[in-house]
Amino acid sequence: VDLAVRLGPLALANPVLVASGTFGYGDESGDLTEVPRLGGIVTKTLTLEPRAGNPPPRVAETPSGMLNSIGLENIGVRAFLRDRLGPLSRLGPAVIVSVGGRTIEEFEEMMRLVGGADGAAAIELNISCPNVKEGGHEWSASPEPAARVVAAARRLTRKPLVAKLSPNTGRLADVARACVEAGADILSLVNTYVGMAVDVRRRRPVLGAVTGGLSGPAIRPLAVARVHEAARAVRAPLIGMGGITCARDALEFMIVGASAVQVGTATFADPRAAESVLDGLRDFCVEEGIARITDLVGALRAP
Amino acid sequence: LRGTFTAEVVENRAERGAYRLLVLSLPSVFAAAAPGQFVMLSPTERVFLLPRPFSVMSVRSGKDGALLECLYTRVGAGTMFLEDLGPGDAMRVVGPLGRGFDLSLPGRAVLVGGGRGVAPLVHLASALAGMGRAATALLGARTADLVYGAGRLAGAAVRVSTEDGSEGTRGVVTDLLAGELARGPAAVYACGPHGMLARVAAIAEDAGAPCEVSIEAHMACGTGVCRGCAVGVRDEARPYRMVCSDGPVFDARALRWDTLAEAH
Image 1 (cartoon, helix red, strand yellow):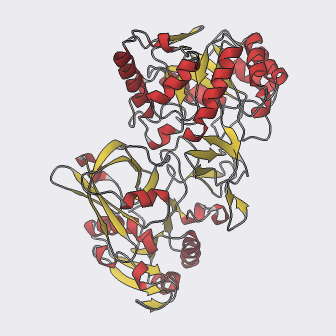
Image 2 (tube, chains in turn purple, orange):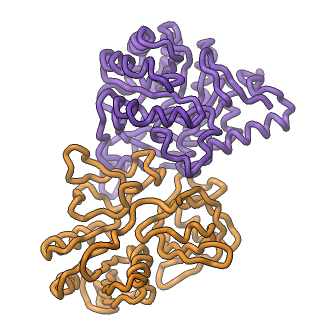
Image 3 (cartoon, rainbow over the protein chains, first blue to last red):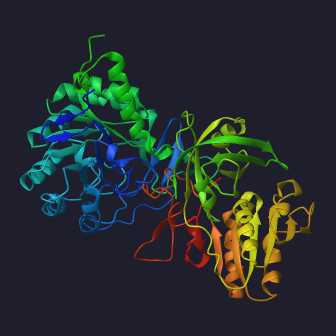
């Protein structure tokens, strides 16, 4: 079975990536899973300066899902480029560096640093984090700010550019089109849904930051619908994610139009979750007599 | 040393009171798990979403590998699932994880356990006994049936307190601590409810005794990558540490106790 996929300018050995924020900087889990087997690694989102993150508690389990409000805790882009990217890029999988910013100027400064960095196969613009006061998911809540970030980044790099979109908008199709028109090569979706849980005895929010982002199987049907919507809005390649735990889940995203998928929350219970998804995709293709995984991308039939 | 393993349940039995003991069979490398380290347990067939952290209560070499003991009580969906496991069932184990106790602290070891917080102290007592170090263990709980492990603390002199006086001294375990520390230089190792740990830390500080505490947090990954189990520390430059990868054992003086929630 040929599992290789091509997303515009980005070629991947297979369509299974690990999602930003669930795999650290990519170089920490080599003893827990076979990292070289992954199609790609999306790093923890990096910001221009290091961030301490949000006050605890930062995570809570909810039915078939989890809420998180980490608040983009990260070591900062300079430390990442100095200490982590080199070794990471030698592990094998394509390294997609995730960046976030509060202003267009911050994104531009980030792009000057990572836009030509050796070892970065692509750059994912995190314009969809629900857990920061500035520079979060409002970037991709409407087409204009999303396009401004993408256009600014496009001017400063020739690397494949991925725009990661928020589902917390009624204008997803417009945002998707605006990002592609502004120069995004690839769209990835969805980031987490805004959610909240309440400790009823203490009458307090469960999370220190009050609200958080909901991920896990609870959001999968919602996410599949958003990827389906984006696939009908743009011709650019898509990376689908949202509650993927097994190959069957990944296939739903691929059949509605995603060329690749990211596995996130499932990695917490099983560091080998992405590998299991990959094995399952190969098995499915063998069972179905499919020679190339790309034959399944957008293979959705009429109901 | 750490890894992702599929373990087999060897035994899952009811112990005193509400306590239960889960015994898992793992590859022999696991026998090197250090006192204070923990494991993330989850079903191999995903029933609940996130793995659950448990202290290594003991680990020993068995005939085909290592046997790991975890102590638990039913507190929620995860532990309810554990109750139903039987011999031969499979569990996913990620570990051993985290930074354990510093066995080189000077002085007599004083172990303080609250309720099921005794679990990591069992492994610690065994390691201290192996080093020939004297240890005293103070175990506290609300009632006698919540006291566990007095017979499992290798070589340690054990004193028990219960709030209702149904076993040992009536009162809270921290009442025993100041007197214990007055007997000479000691190092304190504690695990239990965070309110108890805050009092242990204050008493140790007053006595000038080094003190390490093993704390709890809701976790997602257990390995440091998700940054979810933050705890506040007295460090303006880096105000948070991760319970899973910087801990779960911390120098008590480093913690900002106001940021610690009770995990359950």
